[in-house]
Amino acid sequence: MTHPQDPTKRLPDRTSKARELRANDTEAEYRLWGDLRNRQLNGYKFSRQIPIGVYIVDFVCREQRLVVELDGSQHAENERDERRTEWLNGQGYSVLRFWNAEVLQERNAVLDTILAVLQGQIVERCDAIRFSPAAGEDR
Image (cartoon, rainbow, N blue to C red; front, side):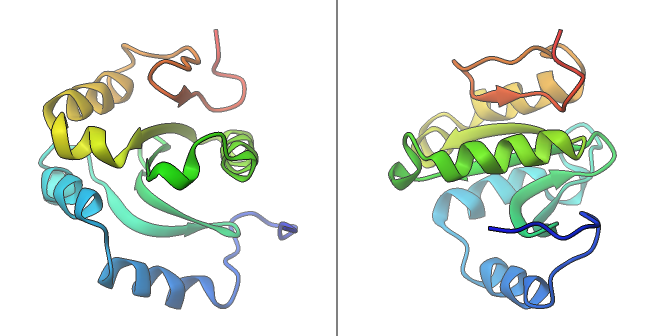
């Protein structure tokens, strides 16, 4: 996959694809969005299914430059996801990934983890919670 010269520029089809994804969200996305929308998580504003460069991210808090991705089992050991995370990190976004099952079965723990990252309590790369800080932020 090639990347545009200017990562802030969207590819022409990305906006329509993002709209389609918003209209057909998974149960896990629907449930998490219910907790993130309208600044319900300590006043942090999130948007969903947003194009960033050539990618469409599940959720983003632009003010804190945090991307939250929800993954199904097809994402296990996925090299494309690793490249995507590296690219987003390089653009200044930290990436936090959760499995769909985590959102459906342990949503409070998921929200606590998101909040800990937003509040700077988690700043280092952590494979156990699948957190990758933005480039230059890993300590």
